Image 1 (tube, chains in turn green, orange):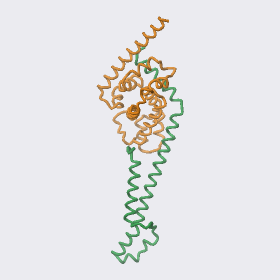
Image 2 (cartoon, one colour):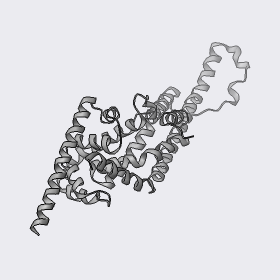
Image 3 (tube, rainbow over the protein chains, first blue to last red):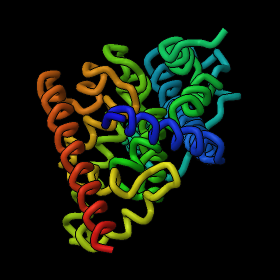
Image 4 (cartoon, rainbow over the protein chains, first blue to last red):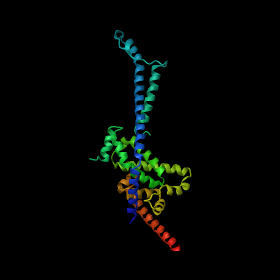
Length: 112
Length: 183
């Protein structure tokens, strides 16, 4: 028997043995955890983006109102959600955007 | 009808978390682990490396362009993981002490001690090339992709590995016969 056939026979027997254990199941459950984490990060990034947009909404309406006083008669901002944490909206939006970009980088393919 | 690896990769890219990648894992995990067990000589380490390689493949599936076979790409990730682990292990100077244990870990009823020792006597590249081409049934081109080495280099490595293995096996056999004669 030559070297190639000795190696291939040994390899085939080993593959057969390994095929029957629970390794694949363990890897797949770990992959599902990875995927869940990815989705949570994506969802979080989306929520942060929405929060950043909401933080900008009120000043934007105000700016429009000042530029065109006739807009004051339009009740657009009345029901809008606001997020006032005591920071300047621009600072908060920048921080949230940085977090969102960081989270995206974390899940981008090939980033880890 | 069984889908090809390329079909499954296309499906896995289109729908993350779909069953397509599960099928790829089930299809390739055993050959990948067998290769790593024979490459490293350590079944536990081989499983850790295989798991890391499969997770990296999952995360980086979008980067697979189909220029090579999926298994060649997957094995190339595993090879990189194995080489990195070996470098770390060398840095900690544990390799020499581990070599005897590794022989014991890799033992199986189908794997002769002679072949085990003969494989251990090869360089990392020679062992990888011989295992990919002669054991796992890769073409030289696929092995070149997995090893990130030129085709000619892989052919040379395989030929040299076969020669060394043949010589090592013959030595082992003649030693055994001499021992039996002395007894």
